[in-house]
Length: 115
Image 1 (cartoon, one colour):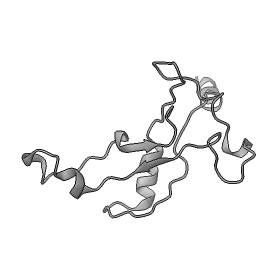
Image 2: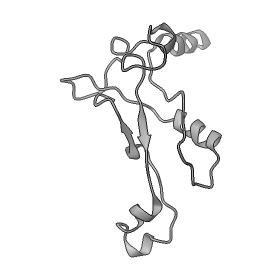
Image 3: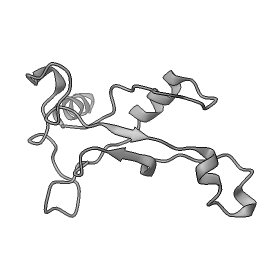
Image 4: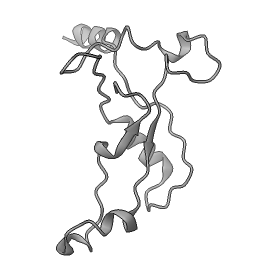
């Protein structure tokens, strides 16, 4: 059973958040904690013309196998997370305005329309 698990982990292509860069973090959570939590979010790839998920193996190269110097669309996808409590809080119902704001994966904006 352990051999099958290791083969699946090694051979099944997956997309994951690996590098997190911050421009401003005004939350009470530290940067490392947020980066760790972002790495746990499953990233879904949907090929053109498909209604469900798909194999990302042909669409992306592993970063260490790409010939670019930094990052390119062939080996990386950039996400932006820009959530401001003051901006979102005005649209919330009155009974929820004093509650903490929940940020979900829907708030991540990708630069690749297929991801």
